[in-house]
Length: 130
Image (cartoon, rainbow, N blue to C red):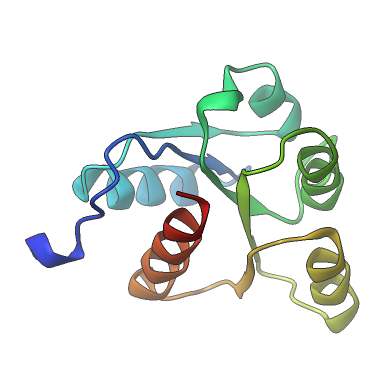
């Protein structure tokens, strides 16, 4: 991506919560290449055990071992106003989409998604939250 794709909010921190190692790796590389601080986590519990309060946006898989993505979303909405959540899943059904929207997800993307679509979605969420 070119320099115009870079976000002008260097303090914005992105968290990736996905149990698929290849997804974590590729999304970490994507956001890092844009100059955004990024951390990746395998489970919702691992994310909650981190210093996640500095996170501005979470790219969150719906299906996770242990705490589901929807359960983590619900927890974040209840306890951490201001953290935007972009839900991603390979199993996008209408009920899950509706539940994520009702809980306050900023967006819901079906895997596989285009990297520019995810970057645009995260950028919009960060700009709204700033």
